[in-house]
Image (cartoon, rainbow, N blue to C red):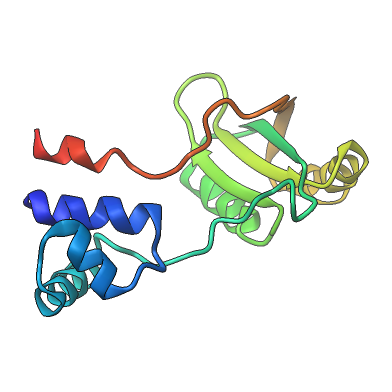
Length: 155
């Protein structure tokens, strides 16, 4: 990955809807060379897919909840069953296998506390193999995820 690839990734992370002409100007390439490089990044898997980043407040999902999960057993089968079940719950935005006391950390989206109560009782509490669950509500985001620091790839 060279500086042009990094510049392309940086620009596309900020605005994946940018036109090839505008992108080519920002990274100082011809439009055809720019298009070719972006296609190579897509084919290599460096770019997995393009998405729209939604404003959770404006769409009514005002509550972010971080949930730590400890399973009853730490076996390959337990992990597989739990992870398959998590995939079926749309309100779970992220699920990470963790080191430390919790086996997993989830990020859950809810409209408000009452909505989270419903998600907790009807979905999270039914996850297989859960020994303990601890929820923490985000009060406000100080820095939201906006992409990887791709400039660090250059060393």
